[in-house]
Length: 118
Length: 149
Image 1 (spheres, rainbow over the protein chains, first blue to last red):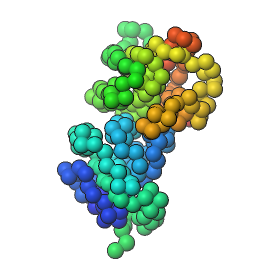
Image 2 (cartoon, rainbow over the protein chains, first blue to last red):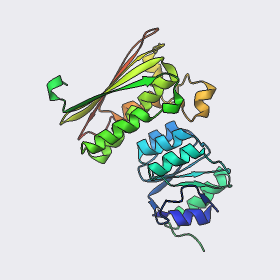
Image 3 (cartoon, rainbow over the protein chains, first blue to last red):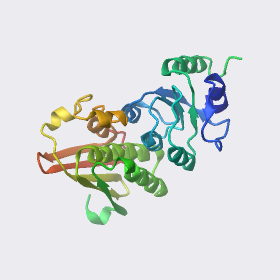
Image 4 (tube, helix red, strand yellow):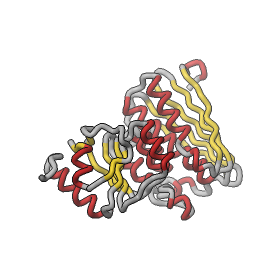
């Protein structure tokens, strides 16, 4: 299980939805800029890593039961999109890391069974 | 599904080109199905199929309508649009085949997964299209089904 506070620490991330609980947990990780691929292949309860920062990301996560989003490369969605995510209790994180770096770190976290290396 | 078997029906208009409202109908359908007490897997399959169908209307058609019917055994979604139609339905069902514009791809769609993904989540899926007039999708999701894959 991957926990929100560990993701924030590992990716040096900024939580864009302050109301999100820090022990929110994710079962899997999925990375894509294509929402079609997310709809086709991501599993419910997954954390999405993406370089796309628009309202379709929030809609896609709502429809497909993804439970959190990390925007890579310093991307941030508009304030109204953040508001939509908050209304749906969907935590949003922004990291300055590239997609590759963020995925590599998340892969390490998954390999370690969700326990961040200190 | 005979009309008297449906326990719930609702229509959702969809406007072609209105990307700002993309997902509104599918998210509403998902909320309604959850409120009706359907299991999470059925709700998810119906919501994904509805979202892909809604996006197709928004991306390609002038206007469309989604009709949701829920019976004790199945979720039935019919999508009718007025638009260009699909010249080769078999080709359009091929994963990765897409006629999407660069603008659509920038929004994260148009990967050529829409119709195949509807089929994957449906127990019954039929496409009836006429070039120059429009397309009709019939999507049936059985409440104890598992999709076609």
